[in-house]
Image 1 (tube, rainbow, N blue to C red):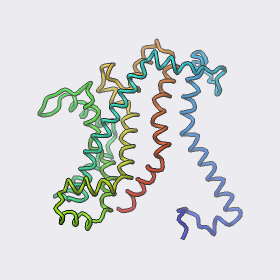
Image 2: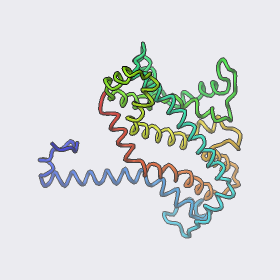
Image 3: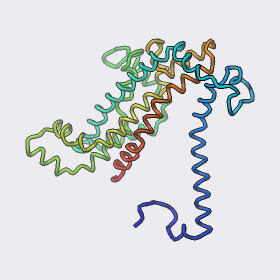
Image 4: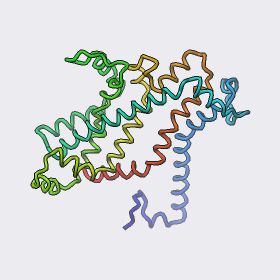
Length: 294
């Protein structure tokens, strides 16, 4: 039995005309999607290497008339990118840690502890995925600016980024799907040996869940690294801003060449592109493992 999933059978693909049509359409679609994803990055890199006057022309040039790689050094020094880069890395690390703790415990409770009305809670969480992000901005901002009961203002603090992203419904669903595949007999044997729920989670469930934990970790870091609108709202103090927010603020002043802003965007993109290239196999493996059941 062939492991490759396709709308066409092997017999259909062996026919001369159908085979050529299939591969021509497949090649065109592959090139189209590759161009759609790669062209913005190409334009960003090429734009950063141009002269500011050439970049501002109404008719753009596909290849720079002269290359200026020194703009990356100027952008790093003059825009203080190092500080904002560290800010972004710190926020991404904190978001990863908070999301992992909250999402893993929530998925473990829903999958293995099975509390009363657990399915209702899961359904309510999944229903939040249907809401547009913009619709949640105002209530989330009001909550962060005046936390209910505590009456604490979390604006310009890391918690303004970490707390709203802590309970991620998509990550909880992926983790629950994976935890459902762990045999209950294994956990029952651990309980008979005297292990509690927390010990079972730490000693048995987490070691077996490394692939899906890697996926959730990558999603959490990438989501925080590339987020722009929410950090723009809650990080109003320039010293606390992320790299994308700082670049937007600096470009709005009109005193920074656009090529340096483009160079800053390229620098901000490098860690996430490298992370995806290194962990792409783990991402696909974890998503596949979490989707086998249910």
